[in-house]
Image (cartoon, rainbow, N blue to C red; front, side, top):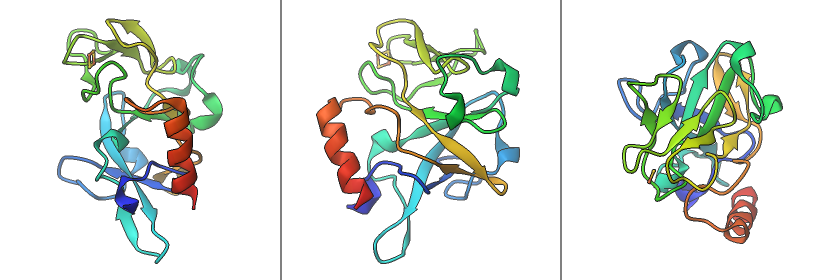
Length: 171
Ligand code: FES
């Protein structure tokens, strides 16, 4: 169903938890800690649908001082320090979270996989085999809009499965 398709260009990001669950994320809601989000798009009947029926569509989004974002972040896919990634660990698919003891890093609670969200979510510890893929975004008024799909498959998909899914999402 549409609600399982991944984020594509033009989707807006909505809160995935908390008091504003289901409402569009505002830039003012963001900071240097994880905000969890779902993509929301329009199906072919024009209905607005939150794409949360696929748990691997979960995203994380931050706002950092612009100068803190460094390679290999895709800077063209960021706007005023706002940057978004898949929220699902590339090791075995757990939800990643903030790291209380090392706040500048992401920690996966399952097997201590660690990522650097200011540097393209490259792996900096533990078993994950690859970075969390980035979701290119731009600011849209006071909200956040995807400008392209995730830059690589989310957890559990091969490159070719991902390509096929994107084809489906674009039609
Ligand atoms: Fe994240 Fe294993 S699932 S480190």
